[in-house]
Image 1 (cartoon, rainbow, N blue to C red):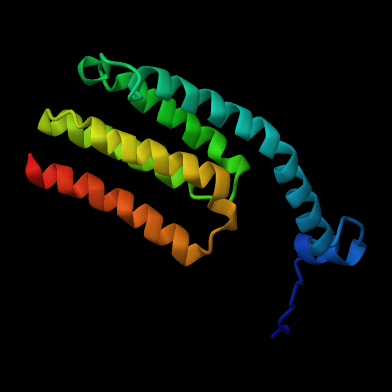
Image 2 (cartoon, rainbow, N blue to C red):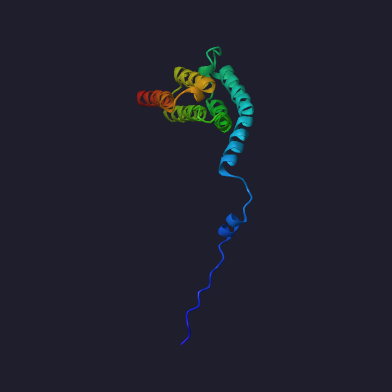
Length: 157
């Protein structure tokens, strides 16, 4: 009878770790933070452009706003969601999602509520300007308020 022969298969991850090189986790985090900071100005420019377009179409200064389709509001909010990644921890993306939710529910209930749109847009502006300075609990409260406005309008339908 012959003996058992154990064959060790080389582990590629172990070999890579032993080889060294690369960068330390701390350095990788610093580089990622720097990359996010470089996106902030571009993100702010996009968000400001989209907010200006929303104000022009759906702001109180437009007497025809109640008769406009909400499709463009949804599109502008979607673009803000895309750009919101450059403002981590601000709540901007979540507030823009809340606008999209408001539009979706407005379509489903066939209700146009300019006051609810105004509340959502004003909140989005506050979060764009001050969201990163708020605590997580404060942001959560603000965003819950948007959800409450949307839910209230849906219940009234």
